[in-house]
Structure formats: C-alpha cells, structure tokens
Length: 572
Image (cartoon, rainbow, N blue to C red):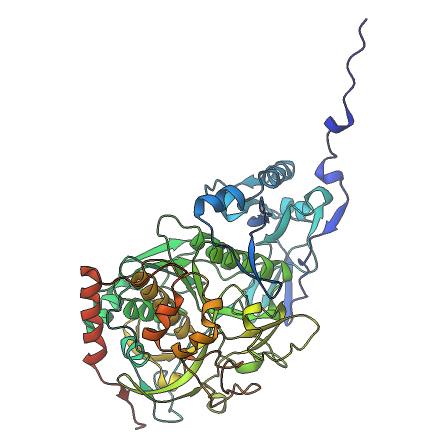
C-alpha cells in the first residue's frame, strides 16, 4: 500500500486567528475619557463598521534635502495604483480574519487605492475580533460608544494592519470658524469691518485673470450642510454664478443643514469663500461623521476621487495633537502624503485658540501640523481695495474672539524645507514641524460677509483661510495649466519672499511675529499675482491667454470685488 505524501512545513496552515497570541496595535492606545459617565456596556447586537488601514505594496519614494526625507516624488495615478496601493496579501489576510470572526467585508471598488477595508459586524463579534471592550458613556450630556486602552490583534496581522478606526465614535475635531459678536447678537467689543471674499482676494492681489475654470476644489465637512437657495442668493449679490456643487457621502455622512447656529456656518463659509475667489471652479463637498474614522475616510475618498477629481482639498476642522491616537495621526498623515505624491494640494486651518489650542501649555492643531499639508494661520486685515492699510497677527483673546493657532509640533519632525526658518525647539524630545506655513484674514472683527441659513453674518477664523488658499491654488492650477501640488519647497525658497506680505506685528500670544517665518503668521499672507508664477513645477510656463470661461469668470470677480466697499459697522 502506497504511503500518502507528507505535507511540507511550508504548506502547513497557520493557526486560526483566535488561537494566535495577541499584540497591541502600535499607536492604538486611547486614554480614558475624561468627564465621562458610564451608562452601560455597548449592546452585543449593535451594528458597527470599522475601517482597517493596511500597508502599501511599496513605500512612497521621497525626495531628500540635506540628507533627510522631504516631499514625496510626484507619480501618476496609474503608477500609484500599481506600486503604492494596498498590499494584496494584507487585504487577503484581513478578509480571512473577518470571515473567522463573522464580520462582513463591505464592497468597495476603492478599497485597494485607499488601503482601507471596511468590516461590519455586531459589537459582540467586533470586541472578540479586536480584543477591545466597548461601553456607552455620556460626555457633556451626549452618549457615545467609547473604547479605552489598546487594540489587540492576532500576531499574524502585525505589520499588515496599520490602523483600526471606528470602534469609538466620540467627536474627533472642531470647526475653526468664529462668528463676530455683533453678528451673533451680542454687543461688539469694537466696531468691525467686513469684506466679501472677492474683496479679500483683491487686497491680496489675485491676478487680473483669476479663474478656477477646469478645477474642482474638494471640501471636507464633519457636520452641517448647505442650502442651494442660500448659495444662489449669495453669489447673486456678488454678481457671480453659483458654483456647481456635488455633495459626496462618506461613511453615511449627509448634507444636513439645520440653522445658523450650527456647523452650517462652517460649511457655508468654506463654500462661499472658495467658490467666489476661484470663480468657475466646481466644488465637491465630502460629508462625513465627526470621528477619526470619518475624517480619514473622507480625505482618502477625496484624494482618490477619479470622478470629481479635486486638484486641491480644503480642511477647516481639527484638534490638538494630544487629542488624537498615534495610529489615527499616522493614517491621516499617510493620506496627505498620498495626496502630495499625486499632486493634490491640501490646505488646513491652523486653529482659533491661540498658542494653547485650547489646552494646557503650547499645542498645535492636527491635521495642520502634518508636514504634508499647507497649514493656514490668521491675521487682522485692514484693506482699502487692493491696498493693505495694515495687517497684524489675529489675537482677540482679550475680547473672547479667538486668536490664530501656531507653534511647534510635538509629533512631526522639522521638515527640511523649514531648516532655515528658525523654528523654535519643540516642547518635548520629538517633533519640530513649525505651524503655520501661511496666513490670511481671519479675525472675526475684520471677517467675511457670509450667508448662512437665510442670515447674513460676519464670520472669521482660520476656517476662512483654508478655503481662501484652496481657491488661490485652484486659480494657480488653472493659470499654469498644471496641478502645483505640494508647494512647501517652493514657498520656503528664498526667491518666494516677494510673493508674501510679511507680517511682523502681533502674537498668539506665546509666539511673536517678526521678519520672515514665525510661529503665528508663517511666511505671511499672499501677494497672489507674484506668488503664482513661483509655484509652477519645473518646465511649466504660464498660459499666455485665458479660456473664454476664464475671461468670463475674471470679469465677474472684478465686478464682485468692486460691487461693495468694505462694510464698516459701528456699535449702536
């Protein structure tokens, strides 16, 4: 009788996931929720969807400056998909893991390019799969699903899985906008000035043929919504056509406008600023839940959106670095790194609570502190047409109306392009990245005239500066005929100084403005007409003439800037 062939050791099956030793997923440790009141254990049959971020096939290649990693090498989308999307073996492993723990793998055609596998299951199975305990707790009177400690993964997933998001659904970020006291119904501390966004663009010398035609600006929103009737009415007052807008749902997020006291103020500010300073551009607004999962999924969705194709993405939400888990920061920064490699610029508000960022000591806001985004701080602007009378650092803390964020990251190292910027040392042993990179009008006392849910309001905050710079990038892309992408190496070069209004007065308050870059106004506010030519990637020249659509938009934005002089409001 023949002896049956013996299985080789290499063909032996690995132990079931449930039988493997468990290790803590690096960076997944989450501190205990403060001021939380325990309600109950999360019901076992509660449906939960998590996003599992897996490793790339190959790391992104990066350029080097002074012997250190600088920015990602620019690649095509085809090259990115072939070399830098998800490792197929990692996805296969996650799917096998899901099957063993009764978790459904959600169907998603962007799974590989976003390196994100979404798994859905009941709480009982989710807790077993990820070695966590989920509880319902109230924080500030609102009930959330909370996890604490680290995520425990079977050892065979180590190195393949980089983050697991969505176990906890506490809010991750806050919008960075400020409604001026007069607009909010309180007595103003001082008589404010307000400007339409095109008037701010005029002060910053937007080019004479400014147009965003052919570009799409992506906007990330973690709440709120817009009403088309408001937008039609608002743009009509500016003598501009309302931009074409697409609302994109991420993780079941929706366009949900409610009232002027909600996050609608953020959404309308972003749309109305970006749409009016880059006339002719289309807008894609990505609505997502306010969680780390929603935030990161929205960014990866926008960056890899081959239907709407945003060339620049604006983000006006964030929170202190200390409020994020390390895995979430790493995953979000990696998404922004992918954007840089694909030539998609990301502009981010630096925060509205000064150098503390609303915490103890000095803190910077994330994702503004990511070295792969353009961090946008705020100023107080006094302008008359195209002439800036004065511009200083935004600091209205004495009036309880905020101040620009800015400082030094305790997480991300000093980027090579900031080597000559005299960035202060970080507070700890790690970090070094200086925030912000650039600035613009943000003080609510010199804010933007915005329409929200039928009301005209004056709104400021660095939330206005992120879409302002996103609009500038869209105009640059249209004018140069290419995507400028990751612009930090260009704007920090010595020759780019002529493209900025250097802000030398004011503080936030731990850091003071001075000549050159500083940790409250960055490199300064834009002199757009001079700056845009400096952003052209090597070998790209400025188009000699604008398209018909561009000329029409140029004519319209000129009318919009001249239509109404800055509104001087006096206390009654």
